[in-house]
Structures are given as structure tokens and as C-alpha cells.
Length: 313
Image (cartoon, rainbow, N blue to C red; front, side, top):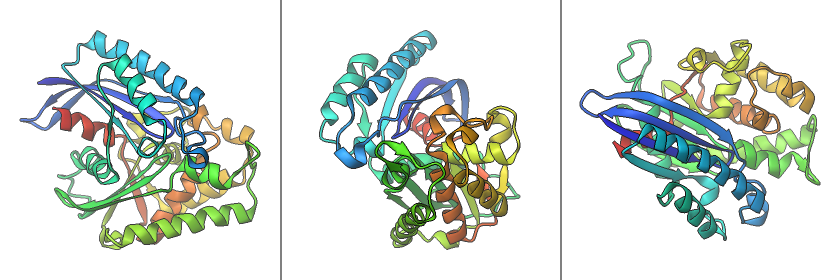
């Protein structure tokens, strides 16, 4: 066994997984998994830079994670940065801060690499399931981008597109720094138009409609699943591999888009850091399911983080 630590730093959240990996058996034994909403991508779509306060929130989480990694004595550490970290003008400030705290330089991966990690993490456990038909379409809805990956045992085609729950919220639902609550119909239509255009792009290289099982990853999908299951609190065990019908996703999306900040904040499974962006995330999921023709989404708590851990092991 190799004890590894994987850090996934996205547009909205930063997450840590420390696990013992056994490549011989394909087993990943989780020791610690945690997530912090840092909103690193705050304002990036508009300014092209990381905001100072966003960097400090991210570095604070890194300091907490560094302590966990030391306590659990991980032998190998990998820090992967996605989406918002690719093109910002002050990227070096981010890289330097992470290296000072964790001792490793962030690996800013491409959308295709991100998709590969997501597919590995999401499908390793599902490959032998007799009740799920291949090929799989793995959809990872992040804060700044969404990844689409089609494959059986291995990736056949992948594409990353620039629509995510934070990016769509900031682009269409924020006026003078305030989120529209609830958004007007034309704002919702604008998000849908962006998502449909992104799906057109994805479809140029990924055969979306050939998929027989849709696997959904990341916070927007798992939160919708938690709401669909009526959970009194977030329960990753109940959410992992839950199967949520399209009609239920439509109902939840409509409810979120019609709600106020206070109404969304009162939903038990909704993390405070997702209150303002979950409506856009749910709408992205709905649009994807409708385009693909998926009657349900299989929700996975294992995603890019698990894929990163396997790559380190």
C-alpha cells in the first residue's frame, strides 16, 4: 500500500483526500476526505485575476490540509488546480503560496487531463456492475467548467467546456455584486443558452447521445441528489451511487430557480458556500440530461480526487 494525499483545487472549492492505495487490488482505503468552499474563482471571469481575499481563503484551507497530511504521514502529495487557475494573470502568486504551504507545486492540468482523472475516479467501482450499461458518460459540473467523458473501461473521448455553477451565476445572475433572487426569466434563458452552446461544442468531440449510463460528479450534482433524497443532513454514503430521475431533477431545478437566498439556505443538505450558485448548477445538470436523453443520473461521490489519488499511487 502507498499512502497518498490528493488535493483538488477548483473554482468554488478545494478538497483533500488522504488514502492508502493498493494498485494490485484496485482498492483505495479512505483515511480523510474533506472539502472547503474558498471561491477561488471569485470575479475571475470578469477580471482575469485571482482576488486577494480569494487567495487568502485558499491558502488558509491549504494550511489546514498541510496539518492533516503531516499527521497522517502521507508519502506522496499531489496538488491539482483546475479551470480558474489556467489563464489568470497572477497565477505565479497562487503557485508560490501553495508551494510555501504544502511543499509541492500545483499542477495546473488541462481540461482533457481533468476529464481523464474524473472518469477514472468515478467509474473504477462501477465497471463490474451488471445493472449499468456501458458506455459511461461522466459529467463533472464544476465551478468554472464542466467536463464530459465517454468511455467503457478506458476514456474514448473527452471535452472540457467553460460553463460551471460559479461562472454562470456571476455572468448572468449577479447585478452590482448582488445575486438575483429569484432570477428573471431572461436571466435563466441566458444561462440555458450558454449551456446549450457549450453542449454543441462538447458534442463535436464527445458522442454524448451514445452513452447508456450518465454518471454525475461534484457538488452541484451531489447537492441535487441530497435534496431529491430528502436528507435531513448531507450524507455522502446515502448520496453515493443514488439514481435520480430526470423529472426529479426538473422539479428541484425549478424550485431552486424560484427561491430566495433565505429559502435555499434553509435546505438542510445545502452547504452555505453553494447557496448562491446551486440554482445555476442544477440547471446545467438538467440541460445535460435533456440533451443526452438520460432518464436518470447515477451520482458518484468518487470523482477527480480519487482519480488524482490513483495517478499518484
